Amino acid sequence: MQTTTVVVGAGHAGLATSHCLAAREIDHVVIERGEVAHSWRTERWQSLRLLTPNWQTRVPGLAYDGDDPDGFMAMAEVVAFIERYARLVATPLETATTVESLTRNGEGYEVATDRGVWRCATVIIASGACNVPRLPAAAAAQPPTVESVTPMDYVRPETLPDGGVLVVGASASGVQIADEVHRSGRPVTLAVAEHVRLPRTYRGKDILWWMDRIGLHDERYDEIDDIVRARRLPSPQLVGTPERITLDLNALTDRGVRLVGPLAGFSDGMAQFGGSLRNMCTLADLKQGRLLDTIDEWVTETGGDSQFEQPQRFAPTRVEESPPLALDLARSGIRTIIWATGYEADHSWVNLPVFDHKGRLLHDGGVVTGSPGLYRIGLNVLRRRKSSFIHGIEDDAHDLTDHLAGYVGAGDGG
Image (cartoon, rainbow, N blue to C red; front, top):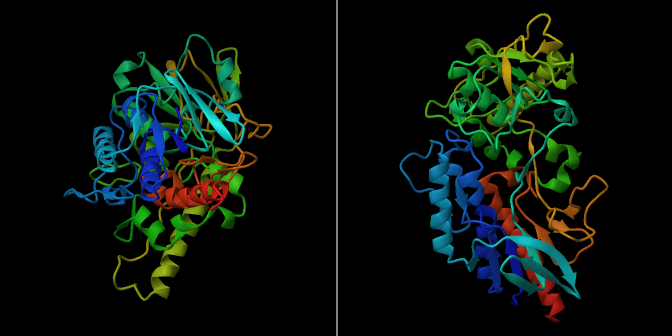
């Protein structure tokens, strides 16, 4: 089987890429291991909603057009939106097809699947950024008497063993799961490492509205001082609810969740924690304050002080005087550990010399280094700070297909 471009993955990133390729009349196929929006269907917990408001749910050629622009989509709604997009774009799809390997074939590529081999000049990997849970080294020493769960395994509190729960990680997934599990009646301890604190709303607008308005989301990857660090930052402590609540560590403490420092390891049935909880929280508070200062400065500079609510600042994160540095898991009644410690993209099927010594894909804004005609889309801060959001895919898809069209044209002598 032959085509110009193979796109791997039929989520919003793959479909947006297909839309842009079709606009340039570049023949292509989109290969998907399951159905359209497979990860949204199968790898999210039941109560999860998007962190972004509905008005930000847009892809090239389609935008949210419902009657609740300030609401937040549940997973079934996200799947329906992506399915609708696939029909609109009329993507050339090969579903229920698993890519087994990607290799070079002369000047082009071979994409081997369980249903045959595709030969092509270019490949765009759009297989998602959250394929594999990222577990710390300490997870290998977890006591066998305690159940290990990741956000990809977690469904709802009732599916967990009876007893207390230790949630490791205080990013968006960690705080949401900790809150839901605690509200089910189980005692929850939250191990807090580096995190990004944000209010859901500020001066009468969603915080993501402000980040768009002041231009932060449009900051390019080549304008960021430490792009490697930016790409590894945890997702912000945001939750999408009809009430537009702020779910930060103070809110969790008020509800009865206990905070401890970052998990350091296990020994003799004891979970051990670092002593940096207070410093981690102070740093997150300072960064939140700097963002709010930037918003206030923008409002003043643009003459908008009378158009928005008055500035406000939020109470510092409360930390108990001496947070425990160790917990006896059995005596504390902890029967489950939920590892909300992030995700990795799965590139295990890419059989090309395009990775660094840590196994990270080498690329320049999605243009893979050392393998002409190979592209990656859908990673965190790929080309802009907004790249990981659904609405951020449009600019990235246009940029990468522009580059690909130039590459194909050069290869054809055009």
